[in-house]
Amino acid sequence: MTDTPTAQSAAARTSGTDAIYTDAIYKGLAGVVVDTTAISKVVPETNSLTYRGYPVQELAEKCSMEQVAYLLWYGELPGDHQLQQFTQRERAARRLDRSAQAVLARTPETCHPMDVVRTMISYLGTEDPDEDVAAPASLLDKAQRMFAVLPTIVAADLRRRRGLDPIAPHHGLGYAENFLNMCFGEVPDPVVVRAFEKSMVLYAEHSFNASTFAARVVTSTGSDIYSAVTAAIGALKGPLHGGANEAVMHDMIEIDRPERARAWLDAKLSAGEKVMGFGHRVYKRGDSRVPTMYRALREVSEHLGQSRWLAIYAELEEEMVSRTGIRPNLDFPTGPAYFLMGFDIPMFTPLFVMSRITGWTAHIIEQTESNALIRPLSAYSGPQQRSVPA
Ligand SMILES: CC(=O)SCCNC(=O)CCNC(=O)[C@H](O)C(C)(C)COP(=O)(O)OP(=O)(O)OC[C@H]1O[C@@H](n2cnc3c(N)ncnc32)[C@H](O)[C@@H]1OP(=O)(O)O
Ligand SMILES: O=C([O-])CC(=O)C(=O)O
Image (cartoon, rainbow, N blue to C red; front, top):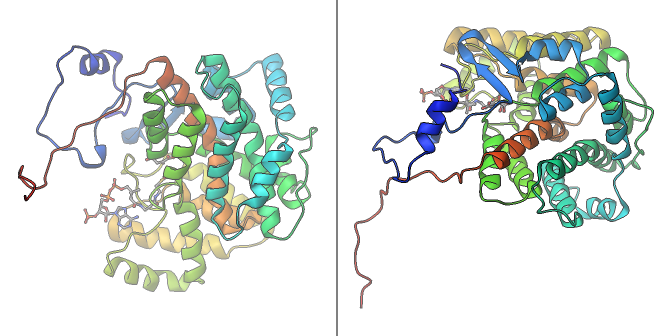
């Protein structure tokens, strides 16, 4: 099975005037093919994921995040000139204007950083006089501006929670280096920069996952791109989706030492609780992105001379797989990798947003260009019809 159907089968499902009713209930839409997409393809049987036809592992090894963002939006990798123009635009759009800075400063530091990114995207919509313009060129422009400014928002939020002033974007630095510099006041070693950039590439796109689908649902009503992205951020925050990368690190800290992993897992499984960072709705034999991110985690661990999280990772994975057959997903290696890079745990899911903004907006554009209102049916299970008492 692939999650990308043929165009004909999708057309058959949506054409005609008579509604198609079925008695079957697909809870969680599991196994249901909703539409076609030309953006990415997940094939769980072969453990493969491609963006616009390119294997994600190759993109992570050979490409910058800017190149991958361009690929997702335009369908092809950029040539030298196209990349130069694209990066110039990205660098020029990194700054957060004063009124947006003031909104960020007014969000309580007690709230989760995902609430800050959600609020800031919503606010950027209020500032855009063309918020409702849905022409492809306008959507692309808005998408690229969100991609450019999100790192500035996330870095400023990270720093104010540490009692530090924001650092302005550095126009001479690439996407990953600039972001790390805005967070930590210096560009880390290339090993760390590349590991971070690989995580961005791996997180960028994953077909009809819950947050992307949320964005497509909002777009299907004819609503604006900021509303769609705001909905997607809300969906990504949940621990069954993007929020798992934070939960993984909390669990590793609780486990504390590799020799405690087995007992910790015993307690979790006997309590019937889920183990964060494991399992996937589509991949049942392992997540195609994990080996690449695991290598990046190992490189950062070796570079920093820190073996503890890697040892807990290995122990937990071995125990979980041998007991349940359930394998790690991408959030399992990114959790400890981000921790080693120096990020505070609540910032992990906003990092996911910084990357997935590319995939979400590519889907918003695709949905806009071939729209059908997304409105499934429900089977009623409440009381029979009755009269209101006199
Ligand atoms: C980037 C991403 O968003 S990747 C996903 C990140 N999310 C997580 O890591 C959260 C933990 N994982 C999970 O909750 C699940 O694996 C999901 C939600 C991601 C996908 O699960 P689904 O396809 O909906 O399967 P479902 O949750 O029904 O699980 C099927 C069975 O496997 C078990 N299972 C699945 N994942 C896990 C897990 N992580 N820990 C323990 N048991 C699990 C379920 O308990 C269930 O068992 P049962 O049939 O005995 O009731
Ligand atoms: O596809 C999914 O269901 C979740 C996921 O891995 C992602 O969004 O990257």
